[in-house]
Image (cartoon, rainbow, N blue to C red; front, side, top):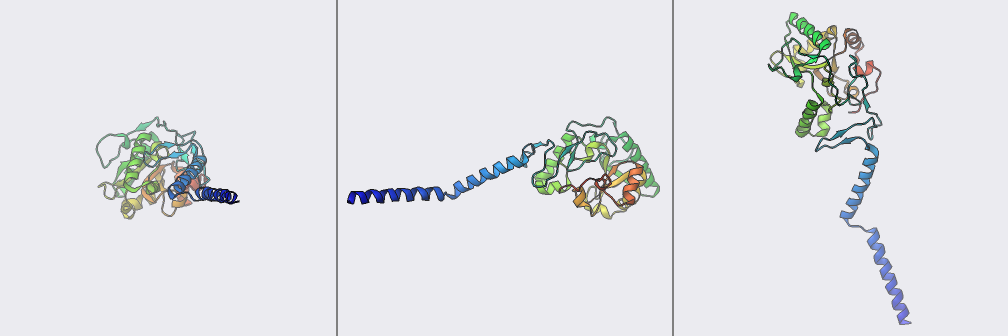
Length: 269
């Protein structure tokens, strides 16, 4: 009888130990399990979208953005004057405008380098805009026009190092989603370069002239104030985009963004 009782007690103790081991994992083990679950969810939701903050490895293949339910599209006609490029609409990685030229206007630097170029139609329009400003005693200079995919990648990575990925996304575009790559956009400042590509530019007479008169030359303020939830970017009074005179005047008259004019849903921030 004692032997039977001893066997029963031993079986009970073994079962209790096994249950305790199964249901009370160590904190380290729980953390590992959680990481595995999150990793599986992340892999499932992002699949062909990879945004690695440390190495900035970017792969975008017409897939839905996780947790935003918005699609990323590759533009099939990037040479169109009214082409929309933003956080949802990406240019082909190898796209380079065929008719890039140096506009005959002043820049805040002297070198004839990539960021001085624009597409010919936009460059000619910019020359007229600068001449018109000069007649009104407003003296402008270019800051940054065309940027290749590789250049934008370097620019974006630098901002990430300075401000972190989330903050950089508020004012800088991922490579492939920058308007500068179209050759139709340019950042503009005063001839002195003061407040170039900075928020203080918004209070200058040059910025006020651009907001008032740029549409007469086919340009729009691409990222206007109060439209951040639509464009996905902070207010940039220095960033103008060529869309053609007819389109620019309609956009200005109706106080629209390019997204609203083309009836595209607001982009994610």
